[in-house]
Length: 113
Image 1 (cartoon, one colour):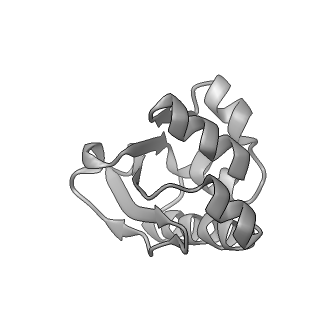
Image 2 (cartoon, rainbow, N blue to C red):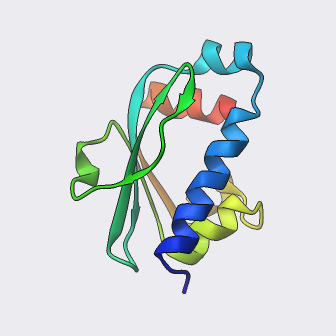
């Protein structure tokens, strides 16, 4: 099982990958949203804000349900997603990644990945 430091590094890696997306493409598909990532096997949750300039740094939160887009993944799956060892679509289809968001946010997110 990965630890909190591993999860934070995985989230930072995902943020770095999003920063590499072409700025025009990114701005075209991004609407400002709050995003939380809950890691149930560690009892942790992180929160950030997505905007045209990218992602703010992830911070620990006690209220992951308050975010507009909510992701849930166990620690090992989060690390695997960050290192491209686990496909997000397959993880979602198998229940290893849960995403709670509006249909419009899901479509926007799909275009960025």
